[in-house]
Image (tube, rainbow, N blue to C red):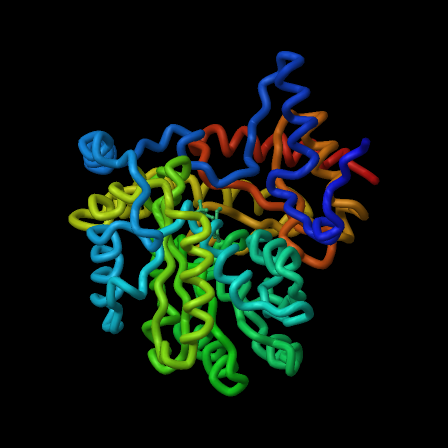
Length: 402
Ligand code: PLP
């Protein structure tokens, strides 16, 4: 008897943890040290969790061994609701769903929405979970282009041209993974206008909403469109450096009477997975109140800000490489000029880099970028490690041909 994977998986692709990982594991097993610049996991690079989060979880652990309400514990949902109330939004505790990270909530929100063949507008490049989950749910991911020449802002004409009578929703990832773009108010409003005109649900992935550099300001889609049904996704993984706790939330805002049936479906899916990891729910209230220590890391002189600067400067020093300055998040998405670097298969490029230099990055096509001329690198390592790694990438590129 042979067991084969479901044909439902045949079109699903998730390269961040893709096949190159097996090679990286094999190298490590053979005694090499591999610099893993593929997943945005702050803990791997010496970022510590805020102490009060750990203390609250430890204190509550003896009481956190049971299932909770399937939307989540009240105190955490209250803290999330209050966070969005301060943006001027009408949010009640019942509009908040807690999940095992944003990832689980994305999966539930998309599954609850799509009929087979329904379309969702998703940015290219994207955080590929959105595309994978849409495909797995029987839907069609339609990618709208973000324009590198305009600081990676979405191309609204391209987006408008791709709306059909099957389009159900538009995904906004702001600040963006992988490009680090933070959208100005007019750009967010432009997307919201299209959603308004075409009756689309807005799915706003704002997990990096507090990881901002320089003068960047985050404009929450929900706050700019109280007249639209907006689902906002955020969580503790990045801002609070506790990705392993798996703790996130989804907030529903806007005219919920137009989404009554959908929300019943979402509530059913929330009950089917019983509840989010209970100890991590107790981290939410501690995280959201009080002083936000992420600002010390993103302000001038802060570790994340210095690393972003180093990554951006050193990438741009490589001949034939250019990189738009990331204004938020934890990544840079440099371009390999096709006239200088003739790369036809960027997965092979990433594998060759790994085998030669023991550095693991992710190819641009892994983020549903249409051509093999980009890769993503994390800005999480210490500045000196980034400088050394980017120096090695530069040397590798200087002799690399496919
Ligand atoms: N959304 C974006 C844009 C991300 O970059 C990530 C993780 O890298 C996630 C969602 C998933 O986060 P979580 O750890 O909350 O599942």
